[in-house]
Image (cartoon, rainbow, N blue to C red; front, side, top):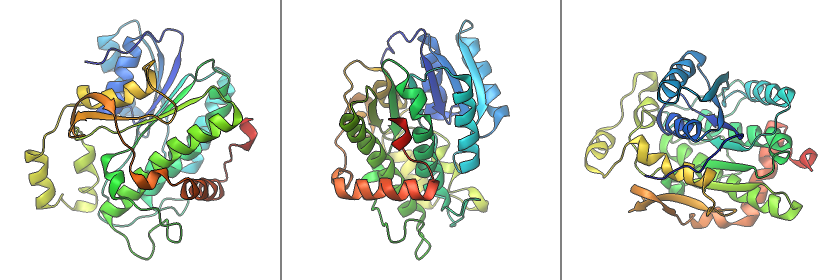
Length: 305
């Protein structure tokens, strides 16, 4: 099992930290000495996760703050709260997400829900928190993508999938966008001479509620093929599944723009270097997506330095 290096004195924000890989990552960061903020949509669930973490690590410092990544006003309020605290932010783990929503829905901001939750929310959060990140001595942003990103396409002419919605297509596009966010942020950091390390990860096939919570929304059930796949494809628990994200966030061997996932078949096993899908390497599309994301969210990295 990957051993998280000592994190004493460091502040970490983990999104989606009330369950799955997010809770596991937060627990192990807290165990390594980090002060951890559980950024969660439902504070009651966050408090339950906090209690579980403190039961394992009674001396840990763990706080819960509300963050709904699908709501840009919530992202702004969360970021403003941290900025008001004034403490530099050492680690941001963009972990939270939704998956395979059966029907197309829109957020209060008019964004397709999977794109909003999985990409535009993390984009705005990361960008808004850049001043705090850059105030830390060795900050990192670790962004969770997915092996499904390999099936994704960035359609800038219909980014919100208004013309043709596909539950799996929308998810794949959002996770490809996450991978592009990670790589583009690494490029921007290099261009501007920032000490910020932008890294990425994917969990392989990790058993969480993500695979069923999305398809079950609206009363629908996961398809028969999905349910069979859950049983026959090699899978792993969250203890192993969180390791690529933890490696990306804390390993001294992780590099800028590095992407990490399970070693065996990219599905299970210890963290290892993963190969980004070819589409994520298109610098022109990455730059266009970044500009469009700034336009949609009204948030820009220009003010960060």
